[in-house]
Image 1: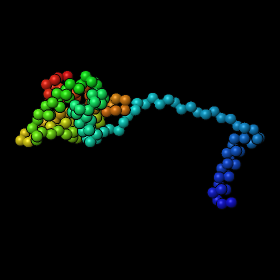
Image 2 (image 1 turned 45 degrees about the horizontal axis):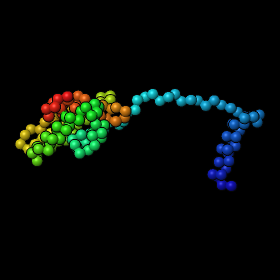
Image 3 (image 1 turned 90 degrees about the horizontal axis):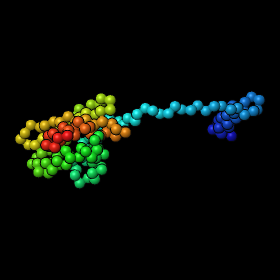
Image 4 (image 1 turned 90 degrees about the vertical axis):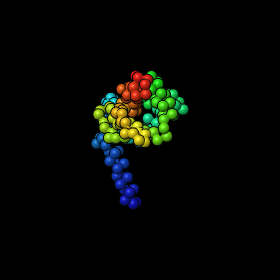
Amino acid sequence: MNGTSRKTLGAIAVAAAVLTGTLGTVATSTVAQAAPLVAPLHAKAPGTGELRAKVAILFNVNAPRATRAAELENGEAGLGAFDRAAALIAIAPASWRWDVVGPVTVDGDLVNARLLTSTDGYEPWYFELSWRQVGGTWKLTKESVCTIGNFVGTGC
């Protein structure tokens, strides 16, 4: 018999002795019940790449509306600002571009970053944006939708 087989048989013998007790009767034990998990689900804070992808979905008027609305804290109600922004992007000069840039900061269930917009020959514009964690998903806040809406003329 090799060493591994002896260890396995020894472990089985110890387990049997514990279960049967010293008098040969079966021992019983109460299984502890775990307390229900009540802590909120917290997803890892996204970086600029993930936030950039989320904004790209919002600007993409060819994406399904439900997909776009799922990126917003206020859902479909916030899509008007992004529909208008996408229309303006379509007629913007070829040198116009946007990006989500850091620093990315975390404040509880909020993540903050900046939307950079720029076009050649002009100083870049920055917009402070925030995403709130809702059900484990980061969604652009209502306040940030208003920031975009005010800039493109749709308001909140």
